[in-house]
Length: 544
Ligand SMILES: *[C@@H]1O[C@H](CO)[C@@H](O)[C@H](O)[C@H]1NC(C)=O
Ligand SMILES: *[C@@H]1O[C@H](CO)[C@@H](O)[C@H](O)[C@H]1NC(C)=O
Ligand SMILES: *[C@@H]1O[C@H](CO)[C@@H](O)[C@H](O)[C@H]1NC(C)=O
Ligand SMILES: *[C@@H]1O[C@H](CO)[C@@H](O)[C@H](O)[C@H]1NC(C)=O
Ligand SMILES: *[C@@H]1O[C@H](CO)[C@@H](O)[C@H](O)[C@H]1NC(C)=O
Ligand SMILES: *[C@@H]1O[C@H](CO)[C@@H](O)[C@H](O)[C@H]1NC(C)=O
Ligand SMILES: *[C@@H]1O[C@H](CO)[C@@H](O)[C@H](O)[C@H]1NC(C)=O
Ligand SMILES: *[C@@H]1O[C@H](CO)[C@@H](O)[C@H](O)[C@H]1NC(C)=O
Ligand SMILES: *[C@@H]1O[C@H](CO)[C@@H](O)[C@H](O)[C@H]1NC(C)=O
Image 1: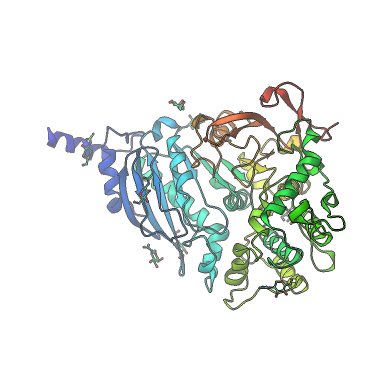
Image 2: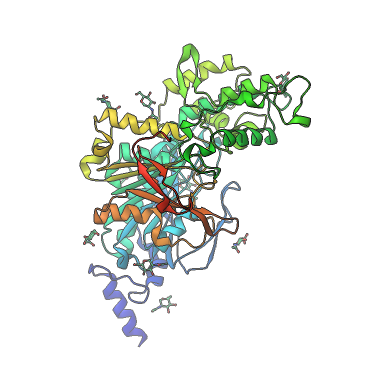
């Protein structure tokens, strides 16, 4: 009995008939374990290959302390861990998780990535994507840990972060997938948010041949501009003893004032601005009169109000050079991220020190005037192409591949205005109107969504960076990547993106909204504002 079984396996191993590798047939477990010996690829070392069953706690005891160190596997998969050399002084660590039902779910491949300057495998996106049958890759972007320290004296590591880790890990992941299943994958997808959205834009611009469909959420495409713009806020607000500085409660009061002035512009009082750009808040409304104080009257000094106005204005550099769009009104995130600490943002400062200037002794200038040349440098030089702002998507278009971009309307890390600008840049560069861009590039604003996740609006879409948050009650089959699958494989392009407000218990409750394709905006028609059917997408942007 045993001999027959082994003979059957060896026959199966050396045949190329498609779809042989299933959980029960052609022993998946055994083949997976053997990959450490059998999988050979240029520049690639197999570190581990092991079968993992759904529900297993997969741990990473040696991972950098800033990275997530465990995840519960959500599907039965073959887990393959690889070390791929990208140059004589750089390498990417990647994992390919190959689920048992791959052949039954149209042989799809997916690439994930992580945000910021992160060198961590996005374990949540990785495991979630395998539940939908995709053979999925996660990777460390070419360095370990969420900081830029690894960039010092390592230009090739910056190049990996810029684009090469994604490109190389995609190619190797596809080769491993085809090898393991003894088959040819059919369609390839990318999905990521924030820094991983930047990587998605980079792929769309520079190597669109790798992906039939790319989803880029809240893309930090203008990475150099946001480093310059984000750090400029620090000079306006100062440290915690500066007269300009505001504490968390004061920023919360500012946000409440913005909502008081603008929340009902869209016809519904729900703590969400459907179109934040229509809100022109007047911060003078918070000024203290003679003798009034914050402690007693919850008002602000003129110096504080002037500083707040600067935060809500576009950032200009030396000689009025445009640096970064204004923070949009109606977000309660910007102060949490950049402003209340009374110290400059560390992600940005470390990128300048260890990456951009490659000088561990570099110090952030102490004055805004001193910082102006740094802004110029950031805009003038980008040797590794970290910013993903090439407006020419003609290669993607000619391949028939698709790009879906979305951005949270209350994103306080990275204003959606920048993504609108990017969309309009593409439109102008390619001389295509929105209706023509729709063929291959669609952009959706998600009002009330913070940076990739959370917010007061209907933000849950089953998107990258959202799927590990324990949200219940929304079918995984409705997640964003499956909408891209419908576009790519069935030609059904998304007209709207459905989002769900998430309650404290993690369940979908309250508003359900079909978010509009840019440049349309949602208009309230009347009825229960929580129902998607009470709203309609219209091209005219002004509310009455
Ligand atoms: C597959 O191989 C593993 C490990 O050798 C063994 O434990 C398992 O019983 C086999 N499964 C089948 C379905 O043959
Ligand atoms: C998985 O294991 C790690 C390390 O032992 C532990 O810290 C973590 O809590 C575990 N996860 C779950 C969900 O049990
Ligand atoms: C990966 O390979 C590089 C050589 O490219 C080597 O320096 C590094 O130690 C390897 N890492 C692991 C985890 O094996
Ligand atoms: C292997 O890596 C080197 C750089 O280290 C590169 O020049 C070469 O093209 C790579 N080979 C393959 C097959 O990717
Ligand atoms: C804080 O700012 C004040 C003035 O704005 C300055 O005098 C003081 O030196 C600063 N303190 C630190 C620790 O930077
Ligand atoms: C839009 O195009 C302008 C002009 O080429 C460029 O300076 C800017 O960086 C682009 N913005 C975005 C968001 O891509
Ligand atoms: C479009 O962008 C590309 C890449 O930046 C540039 O080379 C080209 O000149 C631009 N075309 C137009 C019409 O602006
Ligand atoms: C998702 O779709 C697949 C294929 O149609 C189906 O087998 C599965 O049951 C669905 N999952 C859920 C949670 O509905
Ligand atoms: C690949 O996917 C397309 C679209 O779903 C489908 O029509 C085609 O049959 C698939 N091809 C293979 C070889 O599985």
